[in-house]
Length: 291
Ligand SMILES: [Zn+2]
Image (cartoon, rainbow, N blue to C red; front, side, top):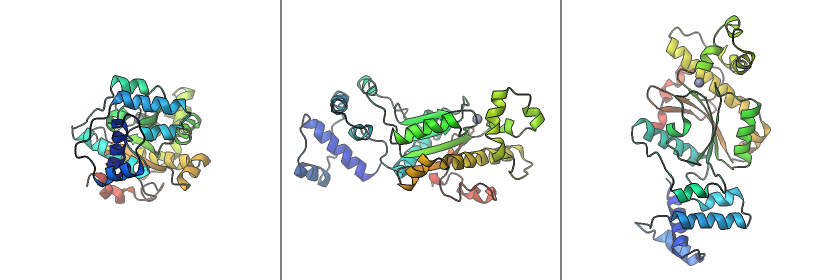
C-alpha cells in the first residue's frame, strides 16, 4: 500500500472521529504531516452512513468509491493489489477478506470494484480466491476459454465505463479444457454441439499458429498464453477500451494461472502481449512479480 493511500485512510478516519464534521485544510495538513501510528479502527456503521448520505445527494460511483477505503486508485496500484493478493494465496497466507454485516449491507447502495477480470469458467479457477480479494473488489466475467465476444465485451465495457475500474485482466489457466478442445481437428470439433463449436471458434485462430512443441504440457501452456494474447488484442480493438487506455484511465493486461502452484504470471508490456514470436524467450520473466 502506498504512503498516499495510508494518508487518505488516516484523513478518512479523522473525518469519522470528528463525527462527520469536515476537516479544515489545516487539520488535513496536520494529519498528513504527523499521521497517527495507531489509527482508530474504521467504524463500519459510520462508513455506511457516509455512503448513504452521498447516495442521497446524488454522488457518482466514483465519489462513493472515494468514501470507501480503496484497494487501488490507479492502474498500477490495481496490478500491484492483484499481484500481492495472489502471492498471499499461493504462499498459504491468504487473508480471505471478509466484510462486517454493516459493510455488506452498505454494498447494496453501489459497487466499486477496482478491476475487471475475464477468466475461464473452470471450477479450479475461482478468481476472487486466487487474488485473495473480498466482496465488491473485482468485476468478473467468466466464460470457458476466457474469450472476448459480444456479451463478455459488453460486461467488460460496463465495468470500465460505469464502474470506473482501473484495470482489465484477461486470465487463462493451466490445463484449460476449452483451449485443449480448440486444438483438436475440425472433424473432432464438429462432434460438439453448435454452441460449443461457436465458443471454440473464438479460440481456434489464436492456437492454430503456435509453434510445434512435442511436450504436451509446454504445448498447452503456449496455446493458453497465445489465446490470452489474442483475447487482449481483441479487447483492445473496442473503441471504448481504446479511449480508456489512451486517457490512462485503465491498463489492459494478460495473465496465466498455474493450477499446480497457485501462482499467476502477468503479461503487462507490449512485448509480453505480442501475438507471434519466440515465447520461450520470455520464460525468464516467469513470476517476475515475485522478485
Ligand atoms: Zn479453462
